[in-house]
Length: 509
Image 1: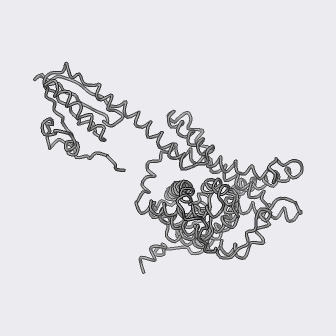
Image 2 (image 1 turned 90 degrees about the horizontal axis):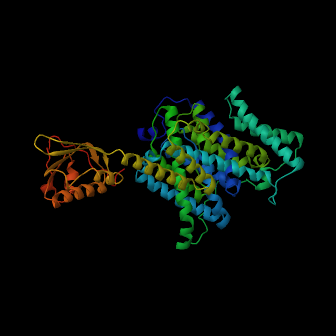
Image 3 (image 1 turned 60 degrees about the horizontal axis):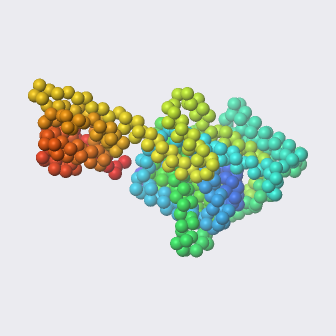
């Protein structure tokens, strides 16, 4: 029993009232964003609401971070747009299920630690690119069904309602944080439109959201290799983007609550939720930064609030559809523009004069790749690769060799700096094999041999000395270095008491 109580955090002193009210608040805040994100993907609003219910419920029960909220998100929506347009909603469900399987595998293999490899400039670029995508996707609301820009009174009315929504979301938190500003803004604009009889586009004009319990539905796609290859790239991107955003959100909530969540457990939960979302007619999703912050700032700290939020969302879907369909699209547009503004890391502009040029380049590149290609996973991968290459280049220039000849005529090379694939060329240039004395000592006390390229460099340098009949001793090498060196017994002179015990960082994270 204690095991299950621990799972829900029920062994701690809990303020149930706070948890339930926080869950109710989050459930209402989930509705407009779930609908808006589904529309970004070109899907029925109901697929977004079903995804928000399923993602929120599953991750709240078995996730690695109590208090974190998951649902249909913009990051996933922008990935799905192209697939929805080219192959339809059934392929969306299949891609979401496959993405969930990939995420479960990532969690089982404990790949959550890979988040350590994502540099801060990449995170800045990722968030900024996502904000640009969300903003650009709202411009479609200012166009007619034929694709032309709206003009005249209809445009002015839309702009006024969008501006009112944004003003409330911006200003209300300065007065009170008792209720979500986004919810108040939507209700206010809703009331204004109904009271004044304003004609403007509503959610019901786009699609009906009336529904019952999410129906179990196996995606109707052909079980062929061709179909699999169609959804695989999208599934890989969904899995990657979902894990990145979820683990980033987990880290943020960890800092706020001063507790520690489990990234690997969260990956398994996200995958399980996506599998069930695809099987129950949902568009899939991941952790939601905004709703998670609303939940935590409302005082929630356990899984109860997330469960309450998901169940209440289902109640709204089953019994509140007629009201939600009257919701003005202008309110959702204003909300999403404010989400984009809030998502953008404006602080990144202040770092331009403080960050190294390479970090700025990485950040801008990730932002552009994200915004132009709408491929968040590719953008992060590109950013990590560039950052890694810059790091390797900087470290390649740091290897040095202090040289001196002792009273016995033996020349010493004291190496400092990492020896790896990037610094091998510089390392080789440090030695004067033909003019050196007959006996040479290369000391690695202040260096580290990192990879197989470094091992090969050591083999080469010892061969060069052996060819001209000179003796070379390699000191302060670790045991695995010595084992990997060819003819190690013949060329290495070591003092076991002084040799380090570090191991080569080959194929290890």
